[in-house]
Image (cartoon, rainbow, N blue to C red; front, side):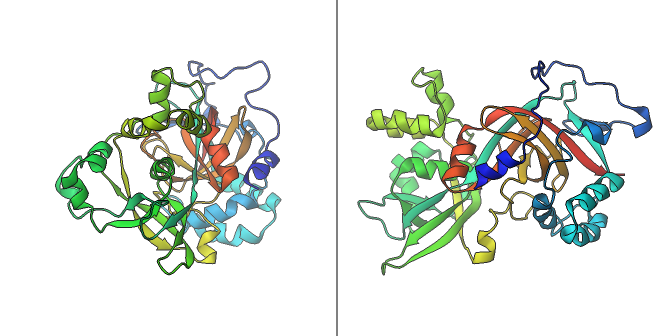
Length: 366
């Protein structure tokens, strides 16, 4: 369903035929009639005409309005005055929504401080995993809530130390929320930052909950895919490629896991039907919307900002309105975004392979 929605949003391909993305390309001069460029900590915004936004007439904007309504639950000072109008427009036609945006907002092309308007789009998702409340031969990989001593030492113990030192394991005794069957699934869950877990309770009943990010050991994040590439072990460093390598090298699981010292701790949250229609809460503090929420560098784009996104690559074509509602340790730079694909197998496949060129325009109040 997610992939089908994305394909339906594509129109004319970007970049234009015959033009390859070039981070060194100089941006066109700003039209002085549109006002001055705006400087952020890590980006420069150049005002442009609405006609520059590819696919503007084709995007079903009402799909993005749910994400915008979520941002209005915790708006920043710039967008708070517009939220009453955003709420009224939630039942309007796409044409009325587009006309309102063009009347009330000014698009700015996002560029690096040293120039260059092309960047990188990747994806993330919410894993859906089976787990057990009690450890067993089948379910033996623990997912922990934060230990009481987490803030007393920075950085806290590494992944290898957590797995191998008895004194560290003693600090985590009684802190396991649930147990997974596959250590790679646990690593994936920690990298994504949250997930949906179908937990088998001690009495045999099952219930669906969300495990949300509750802290980390403050160790640096290291990509296990990059670790494999640097060794020449794989050519495909996507999650399917990593799992294929592990199937051929089962004795090297710990070696792979320990190459990434960062560990994430979780908190358990109920997942009622209404909450299940949205993703976890992002850094803005609002639930993420599949296909309409992105993680950004807040030094380039403030949380809650509506953003026009254009990306054309081997995985998907995107020309659409999204909301900047999250961030991540690997999401740094001016033209950089992580696309929230949703949950389930389709979202996992898209997020695991998405790595393609990107252009961004922020839509800022006039």
